[in-house]
Each structure stands twice: as structure tokens, then as C-alpha cells.
Amino acid sequence: GKAAGLMVTEIRRQFREIPGLLEGKAGVKPEVAKCVEISTVAALAEMKLPGIIAVAAPVLVGFIFGPEALGGMLLGATLVGVVLALFMANAGGAWDNAKKYIEQNLIEGESKGSDAHKAAVVGDTVGDPFKDTSGPALNILIKLMSIVALLIAPLL
Image 1 (tube, one colour):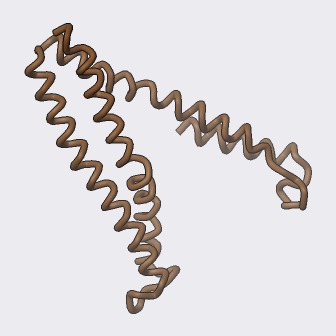
Image 2 (tube, helix red, strand yellow; image 1 turned 90 degrees about the horizontal axis):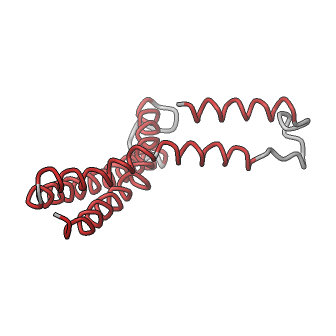
């Protein structure tokens, strides 16, 4: 995405402009704060639309279709969110453990560098964010939608 492109551009700039950084000379430090700023600004910008949807969905459903529909939406969001969060946490953990299992040579004929290990590394790349960020974030989404619904309930 855009953030990755900006990050690559910034890292290339630092390699060009900071003497000794590319060579790894002792005492030469990169400008980490600039990279953190790029990541933070991009993350906040990308969260605008999902945040608006999470707040607007209960409001729109409540005012357009009424309290019964809002209750149904919350029930559906809660059930689907919990199941999806459990899936993400378990799948992410399984993919992570599959890689570790192969790296410990517990599968005969498979070790680091094998096709199975390469596939497990790809799985782990998806699995870590699944279990550490995406799954737990669904809990926050469910709570946010429920609180918004509680706040607008007296107006319905």
C-alpha cells in the first residue's frame, strides 16, 4: 500500500543520507522516529472508514428499521464476531505452531528450507496478525457497536 511505499522511500533516503548506515558501522543509528511516524499516520488514516462504519451501522439500523432490527443486528454481529475471533485466534496459533513443529524436526523428512517449511512460514506470516491483532480487535468492535446502540436506544 501507500504506507509501505512511503516506508521504502524513507529507508532508502536514510541509506543515502546517513553515512555508514548501509555498511552497518558501529554507532551509526537510523532515524527510527520517522519510520514510526509513517506507520502511525498510515494506520490512523486507514482506520477512519472502519471506525465510521462501526459507529454508523447501529445508528442507521436503529433509526431506519427500529429497535428490533437493531437488536437483531447486534445479536448477529456478536455471534459472527465471536465465532470469527475464535477462528482467527485458533487458526493463527495453529499456523504458528506448524512452523515451530517443522523447525524442531518433528515431521520426518521436513526441516528448515523444505517446501513444507516455506509454506508454514507463509502461514505464520498470516497467522501471527490473526491471533495477535485481528481476532482480539473484533472484541472491541462488538463492544463499540453495543455501546453505540445503548446510547441511541432512548431515542428510538
